[in-house]
Image 1 (tube, rainbow, N blue to C red):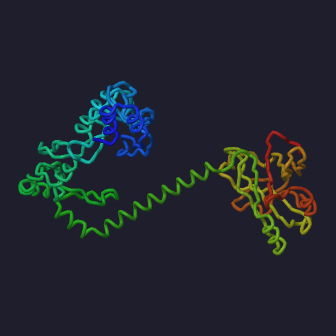
Image 2: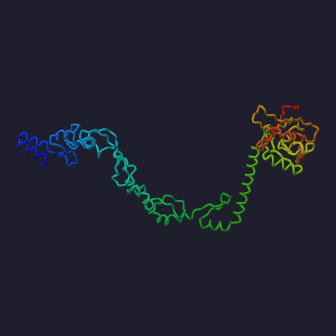
Image 3: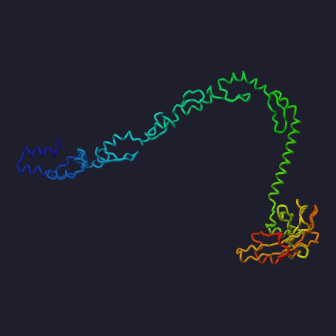
Length: 414
């Protein structure tokens, strides 16, 4: 019996007003003192305190019928009340408290470990699919012997399976010999395979020999000179084929448009060399006036030549011996123009230098060339002065562009 209950019993035994007054004025602790309530006051104030004491039990706010201390009411409503509403942490569906307890342990979205103990964790609804299709511990039959093994050991079994096919070590050509039957195969069939006619390993070079393995080995040892001659002849044929291919590629890469844009890079270094040495000549790639036309080549003296030496840049055109000269008209009579491009950042302000000429048919330079072309050609010794080269953007980023164009439609210089 608690101290408070004892005082109430006294009131029933001694109901006189003085006793009641004395008892009701007695200082008491809360009946939940042992649960941690620190309240202490006159007995008459106890009921009022119990109406708010957090340790006093009251009916569940969700009306589940349970008496719950006020201090535990929130936890009860959240975690233990049968009438609470909560979401499953796996499928996120909402349930009442009792329904959630029944749902837990059966939720299809809850991750569980594979019952075959393969170590994988999958959703409960996918366990059967995992066991049948993905589990490393599922049983699968060996495709050779038909015995069942776990998925993670069937490969290792295949390396020793008696029914797995293996290649004949004698290289007889047989494939798919069961491992258990290999000894019988070697005994019954390898000898016959060894006696079959085999081609010489130099057959691609032209050797036609065929024979047994033993005869082939002897042939290889005794025919070194013959094989060397065959390989040498094959190499010669392949070299000729390569030369033919290179010539074809070279023909395809030749400019046949009648116009050449010549890019002269490292201009400063080449000009310095031209000033230090006499007769330094730059020659362009060869080009054709058309696919079956005249073969030409431009020539450039950065420090000048003849009348332009040391003061001007000289340009010339040479007529080279071409593959179709026998079909062309001679002397060469097409208009030739040289254009030095001004590389101004504003194309509208560019001021190119253009010079052109119509060939004089009496000049030797324009007759059909011999095997040795004219050493100089024809052109302009004083094409552009060194002083003019410095005034505009003819050289930019150490590069100069010169166009040489042959126009068969023009018969006058422009």
